[in-house]
Length: 83
Image (cartoon, rainbow, N blue to C red):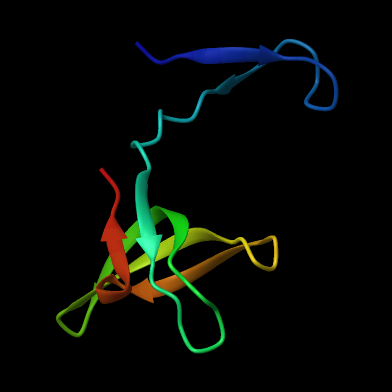
């Protein structure tokens, strides 16, 4: 059975829109710092991708010193799983 939600307002009254699938649980990681960003700092893996035999992760991570949230592709070698 497919879940739907009736939305009002800008989408038009009474139109049904399918709910997106429940996302897979995020993977919490420590991101090792580089020369310009001290680390480690916390991050969440959004997606994995393999390229040239190596794994890369799209990570949303918080650079606490600068109070900035960034999203970037990183080599799996720069990540340490939390938990």
